Length: 293
Ligand code: G1P
Image 1 (spheres, protein in one colour):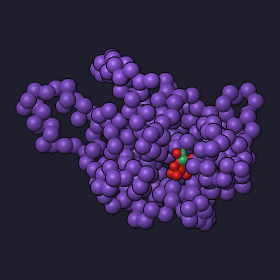
Image 2 (spheres, protein in one colour):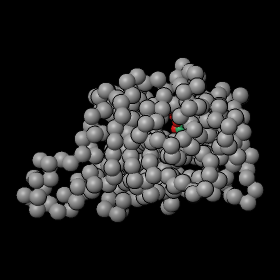
Image 3 (tube, protein in one colour):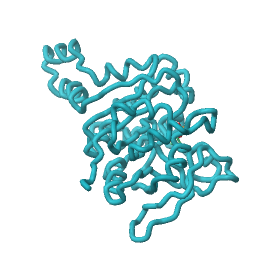
Image 4 (spheres, rainbow, N blue to C red):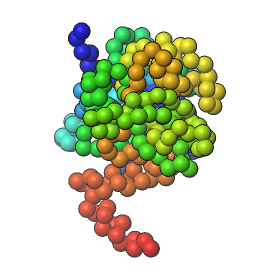
């Protein structure tokens, strides 16, 4: 059988972003900028750098800024052309030329599983990625590429995992898993639970927002009822998928920031600014001048 490669990535982006109010009252949280680039662009660039060709964004009401962002901005381009602002023009053009982007509406925010199911027709019968844009990951090899490599070895679904302290674990999906011999960082998953109480968590290994999924997940989501917070959870669907197919996890290499959270967003902003060639040095001197105790 020919091994299938991963060509499509799904971005659930219909959520209301209540953790970041008031900034997200009229602006999608996916458009919050880290330094000068919206979160969703980092997430799309990660996929493109991982070999993904088709981007599918699941949107909802009030999210049109995302569509405008990846579209051609005719007025802006001609203005920059007139001003001979070549570098800025390239920055703007590159965004619309980056990838082929399609949009599907999720009319009601019924959960992550429900959002992913909206992509069923556009994905078809092939493996695909799911990327949560508020999990920002800085790494030398893109996190999604690390997962795709494991998918290609195992020919089964793979999810990103990270160790999380016990007092934070109830904010995540958590797995019960055993290490795969001879494959560092790779785990075979035995059970998944969405947002367990700290005492009931099967381990300290939390799910982070990167997944490579077999297409059977769509039928599994269809038969998954509401779970934590009354929502149709992708984690529950993956737990149900285990009855039919293996699921793997990868403790990826890299640093993850929860940019959907105010403190996580601030940390990401500082560290991404420090990494920038054009801003890093000056910003570092500024931070040093604060003489924080
Ligand atoms: C979602 C997933 C959860 C995962 C988390 C990672 O939860 O449902 O399993 O651990 O993303 O960021 P959310 O943060 O949307 O509540």
